[in-house]
Amino acid sequence: MFHIPEKIRFLKTHHNGDATLEQDALLTSKTNIQWQKIFDDLLFYVYNSCQGKNKRKNPNISFQKDVIDFFHDHDAVEQRIAAINYYLSDRLFKNDFDYCEIKRCWEFSGFDDFYLIAQVDGSVFSLYKGDEKYRKIFYSKVVNKNPL
Image (cartoon, rainbow, N blue to C red; front, side, top):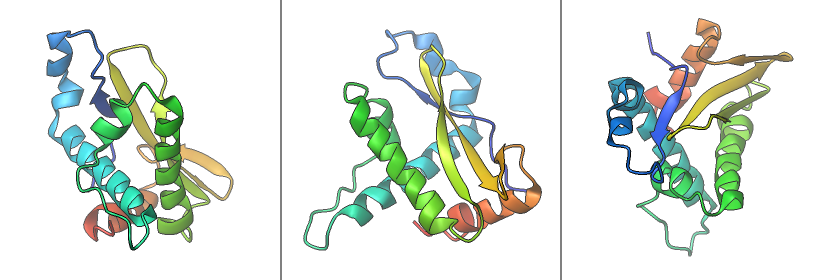
């Protein structure tokens, strides 16, 4: 069965050069690296779909570079995350969930951790702990069919 992790971890670039952080077990796990790529795909799709037909698309956009490392412009980062959440809730899962979003875990550390939440019939839950039915829906639309 497809695994939605409890947290998806990114290393903050401004982590004061602590090399031990780069060896973090969660950060370097195969599952986490796969999920970092899924977040890249989500951001890439959202960014490029918002560019008009005549605008140049950016193939070099990444969640690490354009969200995690873009710490000097908090508003831009929040707008990018909001755009992903809009895409998840109002386009991709419009008929499946009341909403589906990525949320940031606010901890003071050298990492930025994110998790996925959804709401169905007024009940809010982490997709990590959610019913298998909802994890399958997420998998079928985000990973399996690669709609991005």
